[in-house]
Image 1 (cartoon, chains in turn blue, brown):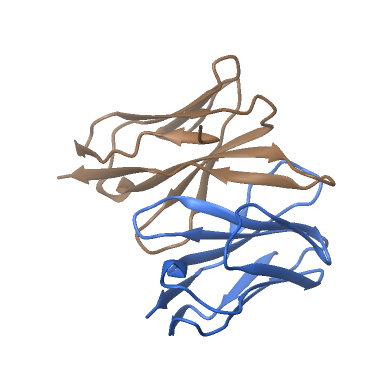
Image 2 (cartoon, rainbow over the protein chains, first blue to last red; image 1 turned 60 degrees about the vertical axis):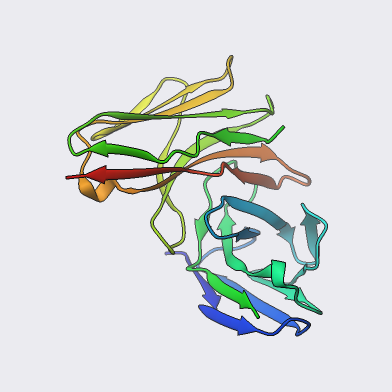
Length: 113
Length: 113
């Protein structure tokens, strides 16, 4: 069966520090991969999605970037965190080539101080 | 205009009540539709798919109206355990066979004894 791992679960980082969140999927090949952010009390904002290695689509201009160095690995990064980057970051995957549902990792709760 | 819009609620209803949520989407090219449930500080989880013919899963009924670009969720005989945020989800064709998975901002439901 397919599983998605996301870490760390919780992170507290100072303003101006770098960020790297990693997500890996097991049990499937060539998944669509997604990064979402959820601010406190708000909905999920799609940040990036990817159809394959090195192929990233960005939804919202911001202080973040994403990379897909391997088929089942998706990384969210920032060079310098802002206070407004605080939130609940969720990685998800779906089946490539079909309009099917997304399956989520357990999320990373990031607090920028 | 937001791609997916939901009434944010909160809905506060007594146990045993019937409650209905609505959602509208703006892009007529949308391909698939889902309802997710999100518990506090947790990742969203798939509740059910939504089809034009309507579909039912126990106490839950989902309906899609493509002409009006409207999705609904009905919960009958509500239980305390139904308290959560319900997210409407629309899948849009992306690039290179990828799909964009767009979430509504969610409707918060609270069931009281």
